[in-house]
Picture (cartoon, rainbow, N blue to C red):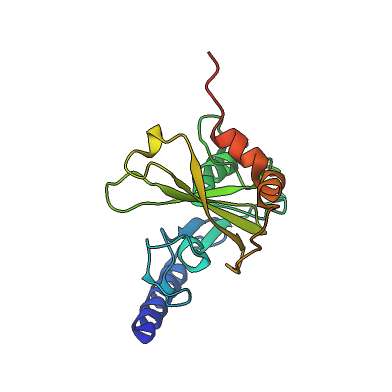
Length: 193
């Protein structure tokens, strides 16, 4: 199974090599490459994708090439697919768009979190993770059939960025508040009336 996956990766790598070799005006080209999900091969007891919010399933390659880009790119701990179009528009126009959720990679990061949801086909996602570059909090809506009506969250897991399990003790709630409080507040802020 791993050999088939590695062969597929090698073939795609070959296709990219062919693409870049035949690309006219390579220096001026804008190229972005990413994937929609990772794959797990029993690293945590699961196969393939969409079964858990593990490092192997959530982390995907994201490659940006901006022509003869001369602008400085601030150091960023987390970049996601949401940042592709804001970065492209910012590069082409010189200013980031206000109407998109993601942020341009040319901007200084202002929110150090990434949120990823796990879904199955057309079902509403009931599990999600908040990642701050160092640690990951995995949560589940208590009403799995109707997460939008759910009023509580269940903590499923506390993990490092490499999916090593973190502590279990009475100090979990203060730790979550310290590590992920701003993200939880922003994600679940009540609409102003």
